[in-house]
Image (tube, rainbow, N blue to C red):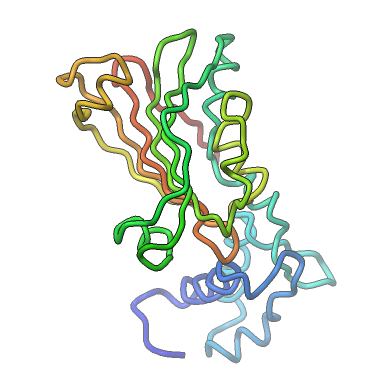
Length: 236
């Protein structure tokens, strides 16, 4: 193997994740044995075991005594990623969730969107802009681009009944997700649609999801800071 600054066990994890993420290894496929990984990477059994143990804890592989290690089923991988459906969040609070669709169309990807989705510039993408409301009050402006190869029926969805997140969880199960959150001021359009002043700070989440060999979607989610807070729970 080539030189890397990553610890040996992280190199093993990255190599296995690359094969799963590219779609080369399918759910249920066997992962090379500990002995094979020891030989390939020139590392100890303890180091290989740590890599496989951490991948299992992340829900990417399953380890069964006597059967070796296999790629996890996609629904099991998805369950490990805390991607919440905003409809579900609102209903859990005992409130009513409604959606207003501003845009739902096919368009040609600009350079930045194409790079983010792993497509060539000018490729067809699905673009939706939605306003999510809680008891009639706007709480999220969702600007999302979707890769048609990952979710070909995306634009056929009735977004008043099924949120984009729920559609993607059902039809493009996640194998990887990344996000960042920052505070910023809304644009004139965002402020108008969220019924807030342009001077009102918002929380902005940038989220990218991968399903198998495809980047499934990229989304910019804008929340009025006075109406929404992020919460989660971690357990050792």
